[in-house]
Length: 111
Image (cartoon, rainbow, N blue to C red; front, side, top):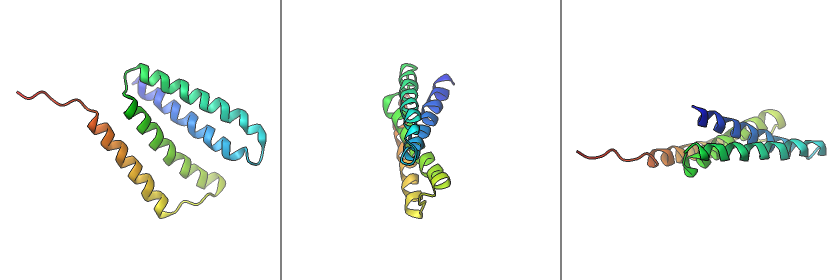
């Protein structure tokens, strides 16, 4: 359970940093949140990997979830476009991560 909480913290930190990067276009003080958010995200990712989650699964979940959340929140906060092709692209990313997760499961021994 700890590894998934750490991964969730990494995702939230990365999304906050990315949204802060967008906000820094108008107010440069947001750069502090950008640096802090990415530093926390990578520290949390390191802990997730140390807890034994494979790098492919970790990065896939982090990247896909971060992309989806960033796109949705940027549309809500900054009024960035969120079109059907964007939603379809996010769905494809999530499907790809699911395939990576399924492919990373060890095969059951044959009797």
